[in-house]
Length: 287
Image (cartoon, rainbow, N blue to C red; front, side, top):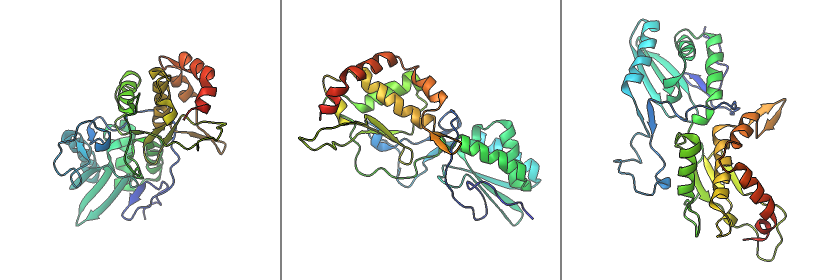
């Protein structure tokens, strides 16, 4: 009898989805042998992919897929059909049909270390409990590679009167993340303060994990707000995308040590902090 699957994103036959509890590790956004088609709403020029609405959402290096498939064939001693997916909930699933093993794995496994791939094969072929533990931990640590679980409502607004968030995002991504962040959207937020009302606090940026979306407060779209400060806000929210919150002793830590370390690597970090302190009253009054 197969041991019970202990992680919700692993599924044998039926599978179950569950709550995420990602670890705060940093890694490439997707496997090096996979390419996810970017969201068309974030592109300045229209994409030319044919039938993008119904076509594949990822392109997989066939050699990498075949190499992983061969691992399964050796362990299974029989025919194996491997599919690589971009699923949101089921990271590993498998069935046996008329002597053939059919396996579906998320593309994050294409560049997994050998110890993880060995555990993946042992879990699928032999149902090994310890292997499922290793696979579950790998999925938890790489959960930010999974595409958005909720669609963004309404159109994105990236071009403001003064600052173009599309350009800011691309430049920050290139200079601080090696252009490896390919699945984040960005938009100006909405004005929430009615005219004549005094604001006591202001949230200059936010990141939605479910939507993979950065929202920037429209107050920053003013001539007196320097470009480097807008870039600092975008850099901060991109770090939330790359380094998810940790849960320590039952408490969520939104800014773990690795987050704070990388935040200080922003080129204009000290300058941006000083500017915010000097202009916080003006930010609170502005629309």
